[in-house]
Each structure stands twice: as structure tokens, then as C-alpha cells.
Amino acid sequence: MTPHHHERPVALTNILFFLTDQHRKDTLGAYGNATVRTPNLDALAADGTTFDRFYTPTAICTPARASLLTGAAPFRHKLLANYERNVGYQEELSEGQFTFSEDLAEAGYHLGLVGKWHVGTHRTAGDLGFDGPHLPGWHNPVDHADYLAYLEENDLPPYRISDEVRGTFPNGAPGNLLAARLHQPLEATFEYFLAERAIDLLRTYARDHRTSGRPFFLATHFFGPHLPYILPSEYLDMYDADDVELPLSVAETFAGKPPVQGNYSAHWTFDTLGDETSRKLIAAYWGYVTLVDSQVGRILDAARELGVYDDAAVFFSADHGEFTGAHRLHDKGPAMYEDIYTIPGIVKLPGGVPGQRSDRLAHLIDLTATILDVAGRDPARAVDGVPVTPLVRGEETPWREDLVAEFHGHHFPHPQRMLVTERWKLVVNPESVNELYDLVRDPDELQNRYTHPETAAVRAELLGRLYRQLRERGDNFYHWMTSMYPVGEKDYDTSLSMFEGAHRP
Image (cartoon, rainbow, N blue to C red; front, side, top):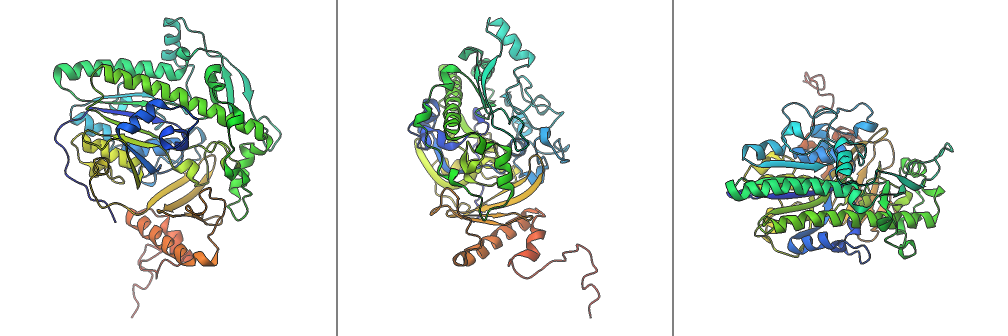
């Protein structure tokens, strides 16, 4: 069932938005991790609603971030790949493409965005109305003039690393950098620098809010905990690798799976690392999560001191997840597993129920609709999202029973579509084998049940549901499904011309 948009509040609410990069939700205490220390995000969760089934529309940075900005699915806004590895897709949002910032600006909001941008190659966050330093790219830009000036002003040492961790590529060359020791104190880290800049803007906005009543939207987009995990010793060594249990899906054999997954595993050098190194990498990732949590905490503490936290809408999420060795993979890529498609989703709204959990299927674009909603704008302009406002306020509301996600490639074109329900996940891979996972009986998604006879009925139902949703959206991926799967009789001219049957007697 499609959720209904509800009436919007009139009051303009201050908004704090936190976005991390490549962040597994199972690293947070709020999501049940008893080892990793995330006290600040856990406290935010205690004040708001934690979404247990929260997804990204696509597990790759630029397309996901563009979806958050525009409220549109990637096939619609057409930024389909990160520009650093782009293989011919569009690299800039089209002129006239809606962004939530334009609506908030019309409503009189201060707009701030501190941190990772990674949406397009030429237009900046500033071009779309946001205050804050322009910080492009996929990883901490430690050569950025503003960061170098910050180090100099505060007499902090420059960026320097050692103890690099790499595997070996299939061609015998050293693999991508996965982790390293950073020879700087916490105050010199890029994460601390981002928090400093965010707090500076927050003070300015809070002062203006007190004197003029002008509302603000302030986003802090951390580049972490994306790999490589480059951390001061305090955080790199914070968690003992001996306490790390490798994910159960390291038992992955890729049997009955799309062959590209095994290729990607080799690219990410997993089998060349060894179990001890894999555990050390996960421990380092956890340290990075705690480092980011500490900086989110500094910004939230500033908001409390400035008296703007209690009445603000506060959002925390990520652009996508990270494998950290799950399925013998690192980073993200052409495999639509929960590790990279589920993300943290924590929302605190005025009038919301504190400490609430929701198992409703929601996604990043719903946050775009919710931002518009709490700002008194029309949430329907986020065409592929629905406000989570009634869920956060504990109201009964009709809600979706499935979610669609998509992928278009990274390093090479690789189209995929996914439908996920309460129990099942279907992935359509046109160039390979399709996938079907029972998320209740096989939460680690080790067994592809697509060809199992006992799943024939559910497979057919999910194929039909995905097909109908793609057609309703206008996502032309559905053309492949018309002839290949039992999705019903052909009821349209597949040639998109008039020659088929036009002059039939």
C-alpha cells in the first residue's frame, strides 16, 4: 500500500542533519552492538525513532547523495556513478532538477552543509544555496586549503601516515589502501576539523535564530567511516582484534551467485589478507565509528548549549553501508546485500515518541520528504519519498510493504534492481543469474534460493511486484522483465512504435 501524505505543520523547525559515508548500521549500540562505543548516537536514538529496516536507494556515494538532495531515485536524476570511476554516465544534475535546498531557501532558512559534497563535478553545494567550505571528492581532502589553514592556526602537525594495510591485486600489484596509522592528535583529524566548522556555523545560525526567529538547516557530512581507515593510534588501537568475530558470510563460496561477486572479491584482495588482518581491519573500522560518534557528540553538545537542540528536528543516516569482509568483500559494489543496502536511520522530531523503534521499510529519500514536511513545504516534491513524520510521532498510518533499490555500476556498468519485503529479497541481474534470499531463515544471504522449486510461487509474486513498480515509476529496466519472466501477458507495444498490429483486421 502506498503511504498517504499528511497535512504539514505550519511552524518552521530548525533542522540538524548528520550523514556518514559507508557506515554499517550494526556498528552502533542503538542497533545492538555491545562492543563499539557510540554514546552520542545512542543518546540521539533514545530521544527519537530508530528505523530497523532502513535502506539506501543505491549503495554508492554520488547517486545516493543526489537522491537525498533531490528526493528522486537515481534512474530519475541520472547521476548513476561516482565521477572518479564514471564510465560515461551523466555527471551533473540537470538544470531545473528539484533540490530540497531551493524549497528551504524560499521558506527563509539558513542553509549550511559542512563536509563531503560528491554530487556532480562542477556545481558545488554553494551553487545550490548552502554555506560552508567546498569539500569535493570521495575521501578526506587533507590537502584542502581550509584544512591546512586550520592546522596552521592551531599549531597542529601535518597529515602523515604509516603502517599501511594492503592486500594483493589479481595482477600481483599491491592492492588498495585499507587502513593506516595517522600521526596526528584527535584535534588535527579531518573529522574534528569538520565538527569545528559545523559548530562555527551553528553558533552563527543560533544567534540569528534567537534575534530574528530565522530557522536553519545545518548538515554535517563526514567522509568516514569509509575505507581506508586512517586513524590516530588512540582510535586505530581502540578495539582488540581478538574480540572481533568475522561475519558469518566469510563462508561465502559464490556458488549459484553472479560471477561478478567473485571477481569483486579478488579486486578487493580479501583472500590475500588472512583472518588476523581481516579482524584488525574490522577493529579499525569500529575505531573510526567511535571517532565519528565523538564529533557528532561535539556538535550536538553545542546545539544543547545554544538552546536549539530540544526543539530541532535531528536526522542521522549514511549514504550506504560497507562490507568489511562480509561475503569476502570490502567497500561496496555490484552485490545487493544487506551489508551495504541497509543503513542507520535515526530521526528525532518535535512531538515524536522518544526511544521508539520502527520495523517499517523506509529509505534515505523518505528523509528528503521529511525535511520538506517539517519545513512546512510540500513533501510530494520528493517524488520517490514519503515523510516518516507520522511514524516518528507514533501515529497509525498506511505504509509500504516493499522497497525498490537500484544499481548502475562502479568501475563498469552493471545494472541491477532489487525488491525487498519483510521477509524476502529479489535481485534481478540481466547479464547473470537472479538472486532470491530468505532474510528470516538466511539473514547472512549465503543461499541463493531463486531456482529452488519451493520458492516458485514467491519468486513469481516478487517478480510481478517489481515489474509493476518499475513500470509505474517509468524505470525502463522493466522492458527486460517483460519477455524474460512470468509477469503477465504483454499489454504494451514493446517496439514503442505503431507497426505492431496497427493495421490488423
